Image (tube, rainbow, N blue to C red; front, top):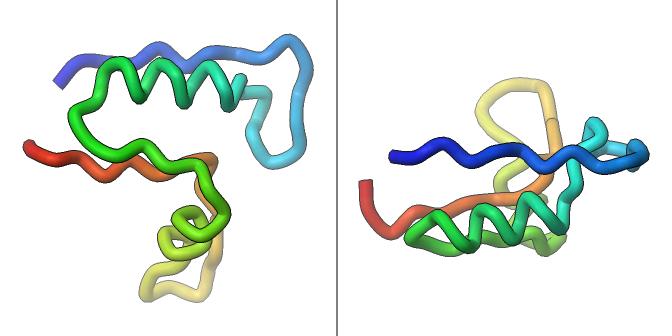
Length: 66
């Protein structure tokens, strides 16, 4: 698996910790064999687990292979 550089935005956007979301999406789509989703539905589905905490992700990557 290769590392993906996290694009940093010139200014901070709420909830993204200063990450250029569009750049991140483009970098992931170019380097990942799988689905890269940034829609509200995918983020809502993957924002909960068995704990009491909820953290909405910036995006979701669903790999096709290991």
